[in-house]
Image (cartoon, rainbow, N blue to C red):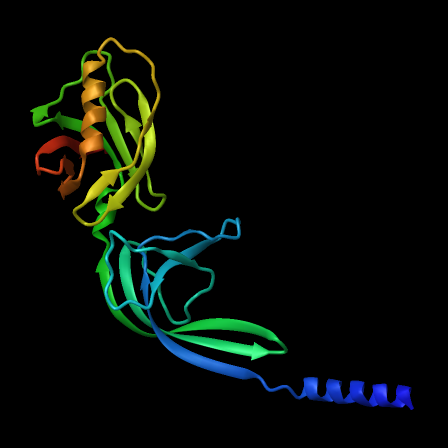
Length: 228
């Protein structure tokens, strides 16, 4: 009798389980999509869209971009542009597993990302408002900004440096602590001035092939030209 009852209960459970309905829900959300991709968090070589979700306006200086490890159906990604999208998120639950898919409803905005203007290798032209001319046999200071990686590196005329930027908008730029090699060179005055100037940078302009960096008072501290 007990075996019969257990078998009946098991049969009933299996039947109910097989009849569990598929649940589907869809919601609309605003997505901001960054102008560049970055490697996904799974450690592989695949790159993911970077998004900010659910905000009608976006402050580029404080935006916290998150990787989206899925595609958005109907969305044609264009590098170098910030996209504002209206997206359908569809969540399907079946057999105790849930999947989520994304489809484009509308491209609400598409703007060129002005930050990418600084994404290049630059060579020093002027320091604290005075034209810079490298001494014979000395390489001129350089600056390389990698926007997608959040990195900065270069040379101050003697030592190499690398680090990150803490702020980057279409007008503002500030570098984090820069790690610098410590070799001695015949001219240490210029490298020290370049290092001090980099630590003061608060804003920038890009005009043609020139990158000008300013301190918090609006004074030009460094001027670079784009490397051909």
